[in-house]
Amino acid sequence: MYSSSWRTVLVPPTRSHRWPLKGPEDGGLSWELAQILRPQIANPEFATNNPTLTTVTLEKPFCAFDGSMSKRASYEVRLYVMVDSAMTSRAPVMDHGNRSLSATFEQTHGGQLGPYKAATFNVPNCASPPKLSDIADVAKAPAVLTQYLIRVGDDSACLYDPNLQEACNPPLSQDTSYRFKFVLVDRITNIVKNQTLWSHPIKTSKLKPSSSIDTWPSQRSGGMIAIAFILSVLTLVVAAAFLAAL
Image 1: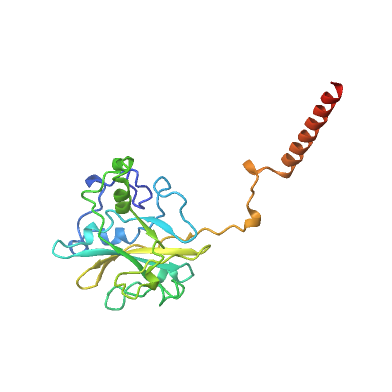
Image 2: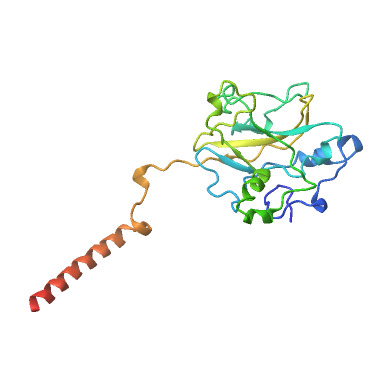
């Protein structure tokens, strides 16, 4: 069943699961509904080893913004990222004219001073989502997952590209808690039409020191090692006694 928190993508959203199609101007509840949703970390069945040291994979906001869009306009979803702090839940992503902010990773010191725009993508097609059954097909799986998921911190080269015109999505810092927000924006006017809440904190992985890594098979304890040593010695004693008796 489709969850309002996008917690699972095992079952694709269908028409019966869609949010109300009435917009705020029609007295609908779409604006309020979108504003109680939070970005969620991707289902582990589709994104293993997540988060990593420098990336976090999220589920895209399927059906969250449908009631906020006009057929006469063109929209996109923008992903904002910020290092978790006491102020994050109230950090704005638009100016006083409701225009979407364009702060970059560098300008915000990697999200420490405020939210930065990490990525933009087309509004997920709620009416005709990709078939999750296609994931079993090696040739189709990458395209299906790209439509359902977005990986934050996936571009290790954008900071060094002087000609980059799009949002930069550089690697995140390890062992750091981040929050994320999806924002619906009119492509022509740059006006924010709707937005989710900031996600709950999601922490990147921490690199383990080499001294803490157990290189013994099956992570043997000290007691197990002692027992193995004693058995080895006994084996040698028995073998020596057997040879002496010959």
